[in-house]
Amino acid sequence: MKKLLLIVLWFALAGIAVARPMPYALDAAQSVVGFDVGFGEDRITGTMGVRDADIAIDFNRLENSRIDVSIDVAAARASFPFATQAMLGPKVLAAAEHPTINFVSRTVRPTADGARIEGDITIRGVTQPIALDAGLYRQQGAAPDDLSELWIRLSGTLSRRAFGATGWDNMVGDEVGLRILARMVRASAVP
Image (cartoon, rainbow, N blue to C red; front, side, top):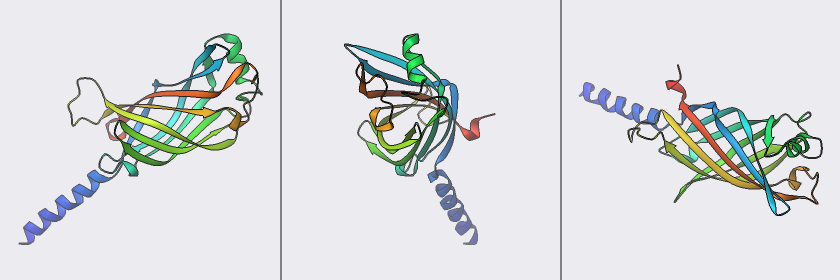
């Protein structure tokens, strides 16, 4: 009887351990933040590098998951040189004074197509709420239970005016589209 109780307790504890959020390390070299904004009848597109991330995913209770991401503003590049220079300058991102953009999740909710992540984003020292749609994918060819390497796709929009990034607002639109693709490796699987 005592042995049976120990076996039941071990399985109960193992179930709790599995139910905790799994930490993931970001592969910054294969992760990118893409953006686009209206420029008259055209669009300015570009990318920013992901500097750092603290990600934990609870596959049993998605709402226990959390994401904390830091984006390298100085590494931002737009589709043409003038736009890059203007974007990094004091009228838009003010990269010299604000070298990072930070996002911290508050809630993660499952949806029919993936998840909805609501959180706070800080740009130019101003923090505003933002909602992102998320999809989580395994590496192509991976076994269904292999969660050691994942890709996350996030998308959403923000108002640059809400962060004081108002430079050239007579030529550049207010709504900025975001497309983030990040490769994550389960922290315990990192050598």
